Length: 290
Ligand SMILES: [Zn+2]
Image (cartoon, rainbow, N blue to C red):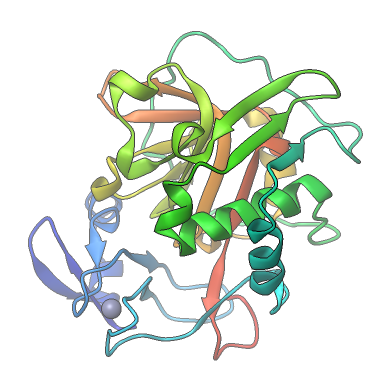
């Protein structure tokens, strides 16, 4: 769409005009965008190298007049149905994070909170081979889909168990206890705690030290997911990301520890590409993800 409201200045911005903003201001304002009509989370995408002009998108309310149909990138149309059936079966949701993968790098977690940087967007990558989704990513993706679609699921007693390997449990408990939306993170309940966190991405950027930052909106407490330099390329390859702009608007689910940075903002450390899944969206009217 061509317009979105920024909640910092409460102005409705036109996309070309927004794209011309100087960098620090643009980065700040793009984390504070809502649909001008329904007020739901909106995001900005810069001009793509395929020639698509800068534009806004939003996860509109069903009743919104600006609503367009989005399809999730890389998902089959019947995924939602399968998901529904499996989760209604009443069993615990079990994810074996070490299945079917070799050569993965686990990065040891540091004890010191990382310092978020502004980062630079727009970097492009060559992704060889395209997407190669694994069994555990498929399960993680379905958990994320359910979280996005169902407030009842977010508050449910459904048991989730994530195994780090054959014997070691990474996260276990009821969804309402071990899964937190970015918007619900509090120092009391989540600081230094390893569990599942999820929310929308408003911008993505690399810092000079090679970390990839997935930044949520200020309405979602400005939560960032920090991805270690050692696994950045693998992460991008796994989810078929050629340009960091493609991550804007995506939902992310990550198993990681929440640290509070000196800025007071929560940062979720992601030290393994097995512990994270993103659900990207594109306009259903477009043939390709541009
Ligand atoms: Zn809307």
